Amino acid sequence: MIRPVGAPSEKEAIRMGAEVFHALQKLLKKRGLSTAVGDEGGFAPALDGIEDALESICQAIRDAGYEPGKDVKIAMDCAASEFAVQENGQWFYDYRQLKTGMPKDPNGKKLTADEQIAYLEELITKYPIDSIEDGLDENDWENWVKLTAKIGDRCQLVGDDLFVTNVKFLEKGIKMGAANSILIKVNQIGSLTETLDAIEMAHRHGYTTVTSHRSGETEDTTIADIAVATNSGQIKTGSMSRTDRMAKYNQLIRIEEELGACAKYGYTKLK
Image 1 (cartoon, one colour):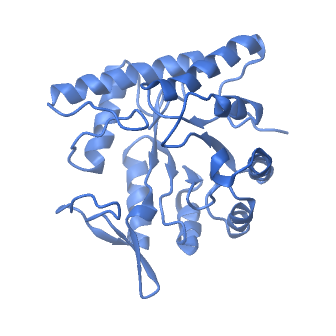
Image 2 (cartoon, helix red, strand yellow; image 1 turned 90 degrees about the vertical axis):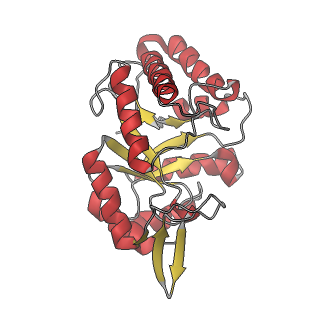
Image 3 (cartoon, one colour; image 1 turned 135 degrees about the vertical axis):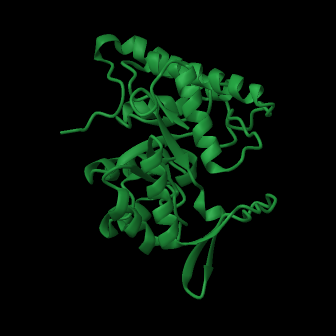
């Protein structure tokens, strides 16, 4: 995922995102790779691993005329629960084969939790990554605390599977010092009231919030309004393709136009 942090407005951020998306499409075509899109509108080519994907995104940012790290940064969703295993009370992160049944990766490694944390630190040092979602398993609370202590001052650490938009789990994370951000999914927790409670608790304790879509979406634009109304400042709603994704971006543009000079791009810390 990309984050157009250097944009002066929402409209410009969306334009930048579209330009990088199409630059990446051209890059993949040039390499003879697939440019078919998945449920969330993103590409899923057969790349040579994680760093190949990151290098490709950085090159697409440059090809679009922007500077990686200054104009556009990268966000990762590791979905670590999909390749985490617990053995004899210890957590391991097995890149050789995901739980979702993907083919075995002969170049993958099986990392300890400490090695996984070190690997994530290596990636944010090498690439312009400023946000990592679900970098560890949803039940690996102890190592989430270690990860947050290690890189939480340099990177947004988003809990999706960790918190599931639930104030009970968020409160636990706040007390332990696990993560520094929460992904917000309205239909994950089940009601708008509980969603707003989670956002309010997060902001009160200095956690950022990322309002999110689901993999299976419709053209409903409610989450765009929620992102603005709650001062979330961040929305995760898929790539620049598919009408179910574009509908949210179009709504954000309409909201910005209606707000006029009062519109502020990005998260504004409440006093």
